[in-house]
Length: 378
Image (cartoon, rainbow, N blue to C red; front, side):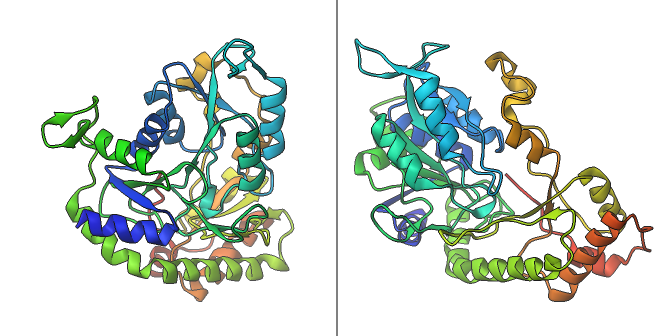
């Protein structure tokens, strides 16, 4: 069952190999280890992501470091990445390796996060990685089926096919979701795929023959079977999400004063895991919508560089201003394939009412429940 799902999901992602694992965090951790991360290495990512991204880096033995995101997409800013590599790093004349000037740590990889269902700007990221001899592993946990139209090689590239590997999560609430924990690694590298297979199963290439220490990180066959069935519907569900996003855009278009809508450039095909707007008085708007029986979420309210878990990295308020500004304004509205037009109209109207300072209307339990998003999951 698992092998059949792996074969089909690899084909869906236009990758040569897929390895099913226990969850998305395992997927990223195993991909990093299989890519050759060594104890004390630095991996560059973004502070605007769920902590699983950086947990995987730390659990692989490396140190996460951050560059800020683009204000339009909230994904890794390639210009900031170049600035980091050129000003905060230097080449070790003895080894030829890239080092972080402050910590002396070897910089070995980049983890761009395809946030909210839209891929990062992969062309310049991959060019910088090649120039500095770094690997790129995609965090595609929110981007099942997203596309990037490259100017480099293949015109159309699926999430999971551009880096040396990619990590996917199938946690409930994802575009492709299981009925519990599940994840996968995709790659075009047969040796990396082989290493991930061993890592997920106690380091064994065959039973009781352990080539390395590994983990208990296998994909459950029942979850694989559920994913196998759902995968057949994923493209249709993604199209539906795109249509719902365009309808939100249309409903908001003439009433967007004080609202920043999601940005999708022609170079991307987003799959809208989330539909995220920005408003100045976000907390008040969210509270108003909650009273109107419309559930929203904030992804993510506190950037990782300001989390207590990463206090030892020495970052402070103001280090990543785009991420910090967005964190105070972003609001995820209900987004799932079954969302109806009438429900969207009500959601948009209540957002407008909240911004206008209207009194909260009486709750409509039936419509409210229908308009409430699926549980947002990371």
